[in-house]
Length: 56
Image 1: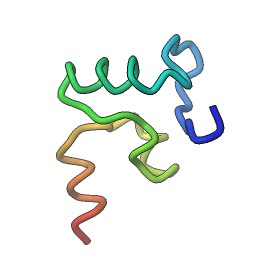
Image 2: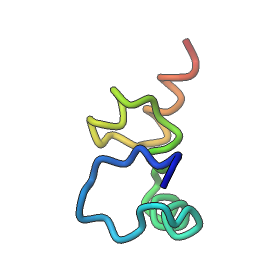
Image 3: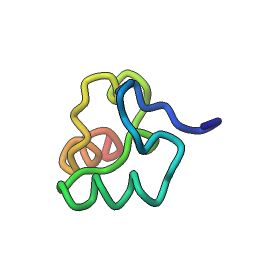
Image 4: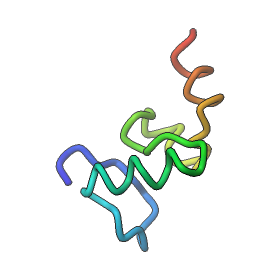
């Protein structure tokens, strides 16, 4: 939980990195911990958004 910045409160995968990664990858997304806090709060965890954030 120390590094989990997920703000989606009812998530049952919080702090369970492997479960979280598998869930988001299956949906074509990345987990919250790979995004800055301001981007994570938008819930846009798409791979496209990740590239936009880190290609600056």
